[in-house]
Length: 523
Image (cartoon, rainbow, N blue to C red; front, side, top):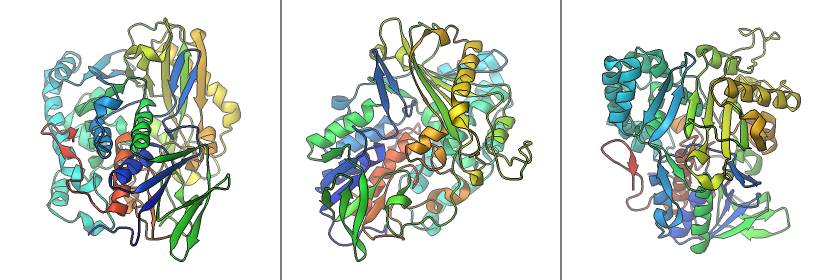
């Protein structure tokens, strides 16, 4: 039996209007609860931020949108249809992978087209291997979804069952790097199917093979673009919630939770308002700062951070894809630099210190290639994500990097790398820009200065990650977001909102996400 909040739960306050908080709010409202969402920002979105200036609309948070069925399922909780709230465009080319040797590979949502690209670049043997691997990814995802991802877990015993045995037999607890290497001989394909480990905050040389399923979401099951940008997704959820009766308090920070005995009885905002509460969903990055008595079970390990450069440029930049993974020549060295012990990297002092990538691999998104509403005529918007160390030395980060001075220089370096790799003319055409560094992430309240939260080490995964209903703290406080189960990424935090709501309402009839035969998620 899944543990749930005891006692009355008629009035619920949700702290945070990011995707996790919105997901929880819609589920709770659909189950008949009176719901109020408190958000310190001026509108919904959380990490999915937006800068609008001079006709450019820059998404400053996530740039890759997968598993739209999860958003559809959330909207359905209040009787809404996805098609009435969002227009989604499937990307024929989900990624373009550019390699240091000058070659490139277009990753297609259609497996036949993808296999043809691989055969042309890597040979027929690798094309056959690709088809086998895509089938393996889909099967692995189906195996893990209901048992390890789409459910509340309170103890490791919750995992016991035939699915765990199958995962062990499939080598799911081996290393991701070795799992991929067994399938492919071409180093380019090995990189393509293992770089996603960084989304989970770990090197593919440390990540367990079960994390291969991350590639299923953005390579196997496809990528979409929401018209209006990623920020359109939280706006759609918030609009549906408001229409269903969810109350929103924007521009209000939670000062503290009022506790009587073992329960929170009210939420106090910084403007003096008291919101009565029978239950509270805390969907913030550091719940330990807000929730009395809540502490994590062990010293946390955080994911690497990033520098994110978002620009609006008056340039056509022809020939570029919507999403591009630009690989440098270095590979294992990249992960060493981001997370390894500083003594091995010449860092001196003996403390764990990461450093800036000397040969960066970058994720570049140009959504205006698909959606012209995001930029003026003749312009483009780009988001460039360059992984960096976080600020926590225990996690291999480096708090001594002076990002005030380093940030502008690194911004220039990233743009110079892009120019050299084919985005010619970008730097001189920039009209609008927004840059985030580990220090700006920290100023926004993100632990260790990383937007990617807790790393998915073995000890911070599944039942070992903080559950949505913690055993420490008030009995009627539930958690949601990337710091708790199931983890990091847009699909995962949307799921976490549903799991948090179910800690209050109990599992709903037919709850959960069904899987198609191809491994994609479906309503």
